[in-house]
Image (cartoon, rainbow, N blue to C red; front, side, top):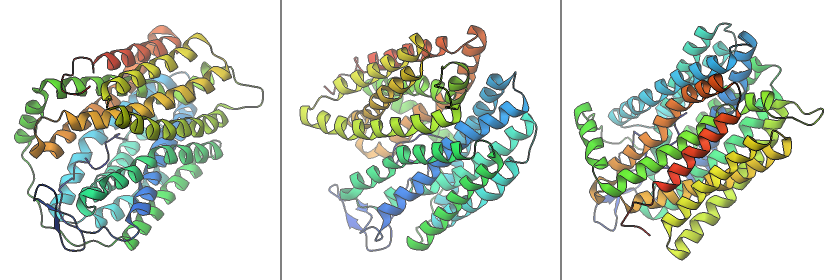
Length: 428
């Protein structure tokens, strides 16, 4: 999974959708009226995607790895997660470039969604860490074909004036998908092979629904951007003082968040004292919806308050600091109530952070004409830490012999992320 900002995927082109193009405020062509019902379809498509991204690695894959090698589960899970994250991060822009060159999104959404089903069937039937790694990387490949094309639908088909609503529909896919993923994963925790098929079927069915109900017009094919030009663009963006600090802050916060989030099932099994009769899988099914509700509330409220008071840095710094406080709760207590409190406070902090920090970043972009490119650079701060997090977390847990040190390290990273916004000069 590569966490990304809505509408800034690797396949973003800004090409027109069905209907005549119109001109935006700058005089540049922008998409015409979006396909009827496109926003609910975007919500469904992103919900299905995040359900698989949360339910498979966060529950079923962790259980499968534990079954194969109980003693080495932490190191093995870190290895599988880290390698697959590298694979996903590399494959996502490749898949986006392929859909750009074809001038179509729907065939890629459909192909990626349908191919998930046989890959999930294969994943449930392997019995070694090596094969799990290979097949899950294959799963990341087909899911990133789906994700790259789906992410590009907003800039392709939604006019600028409606981008806010479209981004909200995309953004709500994360908490809703997290909840669905946790519930389905818990329901099939003892039959994870069947669970894999259920997740594959959800994505495949959603891909069919989306492509059937949201027809598209073929766009002009786009030439691929040379790798040298992409690297030069990355360097140019980070030479800008305020954007560089926003990038650093996002990278630190995401690294701290995913260092803990990826190991949630093992934390509940090996660190938390659960009430009698409550399994770790059942606990995940409780914590995910609780955190998702908190995230939705703080996303909406944080964005509104930051607009009202025109204070982006204050809300970004405070929400990152709140995420650090949340991580201290399970560090000092291994009780179930502490994990519930952590889930609520962490959801409040992370939801507000992502909402307001995205707004802050749009205000410190180096050049307005390169906004899409620079938002793509920001996504490196989302995806890069997700590569590092599994390796770093498994190393911390292995060296310290427990999860308390992991919570403390993640809290320090969140504090540093909060402090990183202070040097920004152009935004309050």
